[in-house]
Length: 195
Image (cartoon, rainbow, N blue to C red; front, side):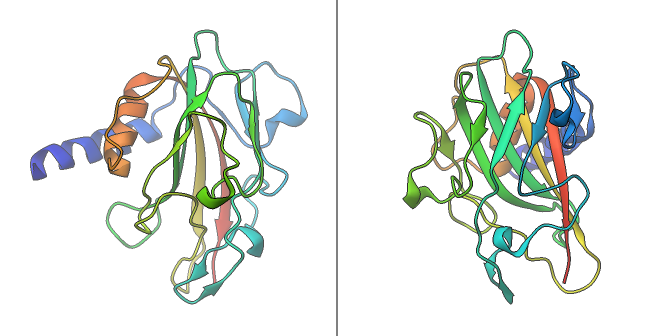
């Protein structure tokens, strides 16, 4: 079981850094290049993440509101989307998973601010929020230890399947492995946060 988890984690880390067809990053949606893009009015590429999106706990006093996100130009053949939010700089040896959403219908092109709170019920029908490294489903904002700012990658995957067949209590690595296996394109946005 440990070997399987290690293999899945290793494959996930390698796949997360490998480019996919149609991969793009940043707030490129301000110009329509035809590329698959992810943008947010709440997070600018490479800029500091606002306190509204920061976790409330572990010494941080943010509002823990998931940012509004929108995307354009998914590739032909997209049947669903998955959103993975990861901090590779967390001092854990494997980073920290902040938000995991999968089975987002192909007809959806945005998530409103606050959709990461399962109690608000703002997710599109069928979308699933998995347990993060905070131990609960939904969005958990940045809250790194004091020191160097961390990078927070919002990675949106266009998938060739309508839904992922994963257990309800699947780990982030297990979901990530399945997302990468079904991905046909990836768009991403990276914000920074430190204290």
